[in-house]
Image (tube, rainbow, N blue to C red):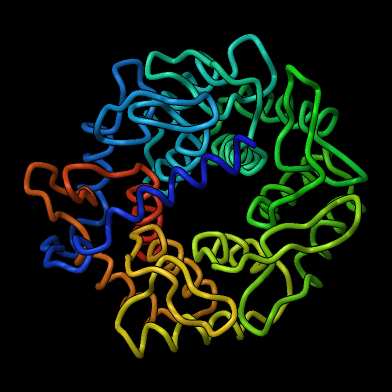
Length: 363
């Protein structure tokens, strides 16, 4: 389905980092505070209509289920909204809200997960994780900058659609196809955004019992001694694991699980041990023997790992991860501030490092 295909595209791009990410770069200082990456995104990864391009280079889309070239993702919009919240950029947040209404949710109360470069929605599905991220950003923006009740109202409308269309057996699921009126039985654990769900409970949209269901899901989910499952089947109650563990997914789950009382020492120690031994973290690891399944590094992994380390109260590790992340930055002199390799980049690989930088700066 679409959300799975999108992840495949993302990881196909990460494969391009095989050797380039091992080179010399990152000449920018701490004083930059992430602003150069923010400028890079605004200048080079923004389409004329204001939507955020998935890739730096143009490419034709071969399937509506795959993101390509300058197509825009709701995932990018949500992450960018988090970035401008962290950098206290109200003007950029207001523009993001306009982009949401003008393109991603035009005349409807659901968010299309992908747009053409021109801003057309050629898909009829949403993506739960992206929706919750955007809803959470709208609620935070309304609290942070008073005088915008429409942001909260929009969050409520989008939430109502999720609760009325995207639930199955008491759980929200990965997506809903509004054309076919179909939904899967799966809930990706990386999508269980407890912070946003808690905010919705506080707003009175989500009852406490429902919120507790998601809290318990993350609090009590199994693990294999280090890694979490990939997804939860809301019908059978079964968890699914990956053979090759995607660290981005693992870290997203970990950050959400940080809202519970669960002890995350096993995953934290795995990451710390691997970084201490090799000075780097790879994009994927084998579940069986914990060895690297790929040879590339991902700037996104470091951005999330910084946030996870801070959540665990280990600023020292967060700073070490940050120092290493900067060595992947600014390789291509034509694109200062960008994580660009072989003249291309995925926006995910710039937004998550940027969030890591702001998390460290604001901690």
